[in-house]
Length: 426
Figure 1 (spheres, one colour):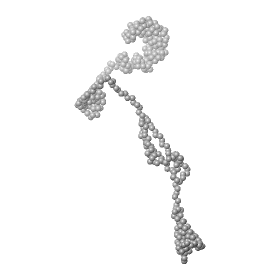
Figure 2 (figure 1 turned 180 degrees about the horizontal axis):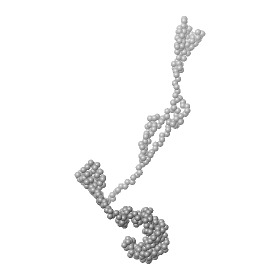
Figure 3 (figure 1 turned 90 degrees about the vertical axis):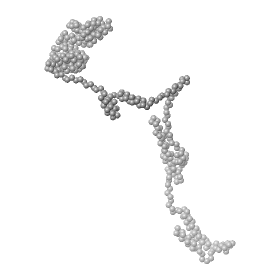
Figure 4 (figure 1 turned 135 degrees about the vertical axis):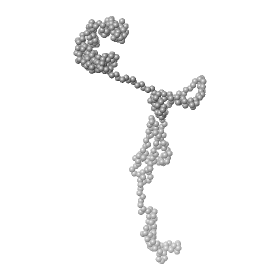
């Protein structure tokens, strides 16, 4: 700028001519001026010194070429985004409604953007429209939850027949307050009286009425204590095996098995070589279905007295109950061998052969028993059962009648059943 100013100053200084000017307009009006060399030189100087610098100055002032150029920022096109939908209320338990997912507008816009964006404004693709955010907010409607469909409920209207007269109006008088209070008190008392004793005491104690609880406890019926007699000492005279043995038989007949066994054990302490004690104890264990213990007691009796037929017979009965028929037959035969007139062993052996289907052997053994003891009720009963199974009802009826005569005292209940059974065989 200083160079241009200096050139302008020089030009102004040179403009002051010495002497008369080269062109006098006032004097030479109407006369043609003749071009001289000095005039062309002055024009050139004027152009070079004034016009050119002035135009340069104007250009510099207007265009400002030395000013820093602004950086061009390629901003992406502004795309209106749809605001997110308001949160929907929680639907009912049975019906779950999921709102449709909003389309990702921003991601689609980013994919659709071209690589090179011109400097002037956002690029609008064909089919796109400018939307103001305010207009978009006004257009978007909040998603409303779909109402739950209720099932139609069948309503039944009861209509009275047209001919029926209207129901009469009843006026109900409310009882006075005192009566209501008394009725409630009586109801509470009835409820308390219906409760069990322990609950009554708990309810009364909860109300902190200790006196009432004590009175109630006192009013309860006291449990009667069991009458206990002092144990009488047994004198030495009763310390006898036969005494305990007879007591054991009495308890055994009344089926008091524990007392019978305790008395048998006391008798065994006093006379350990008595085989009848162990035999009778084995019979009790057989009734209690303790078969192994029963056989053990019978074997003790046999050990003490090998020629004792009853333990062998009883061992056979236990094996028959266990359905070990071969062992039962073997022990019955031992008992018969020791005592051929043992009618119990003979009848039991016949029953085993009948069970095995050997009816002829059973009949022969029972006839042998009848010869030895015609008054034995059990033999007549077994003969009747055998003949009934064979189909000889006449012989069966005969032996049933004989049993009824002989066993009226020993087997009264069985005799009554036999009499009723005879009627069916006639």
